[in-house]
Length: 218
Image (cartoon, rainbow, N blue to C red; front, side, top):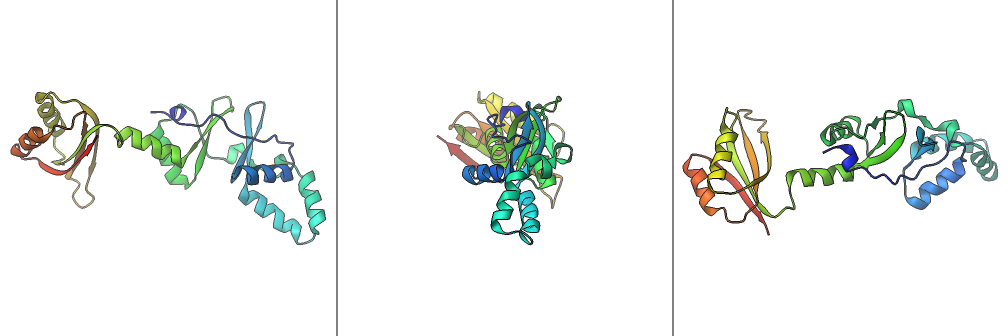
């Protein structure tokens, strides 16, 4: 799955010559914490709540409310915006898991999606990442989720898959992780397109596999 499979393409933006008062009004009305600054589809920068907060107090210390409003109406977004070159962005063809790494490493809530020409194509949020994860692991899909304790040994997954195939059951999703306390042991989590797994589970157990949990979605 790629970023362009999950990103929102209808992004509300502001022109670089728009006033700060207009940008602030748009952010309040839409409930946004940031606004991309775009001209001719090209991303130039970003106006954020933090940028506005940093700008306003410095002016408010010496200006009256009326004077401050005047300054905000005359100051444009391009005057104080975060420049595009200083922003964390991603290309539309980035793998969704690589985008998730960016979210985690940079501690950000959203990513602007920019193509090789510098054009803004969309935005990806943490909610989009979570929705993608739910789809990738098949959380809401019909069938059965079986968590199997397994050693990190050559052929383990192949053996489990072959056993499942013998029962004429289709595997729809596979994930695995290993325990921090014992990296040689972990769980293989398999989702199957059936609810009838009793005989399969018994056979897996007879082969020495420990079934950690079973969850069925009807």
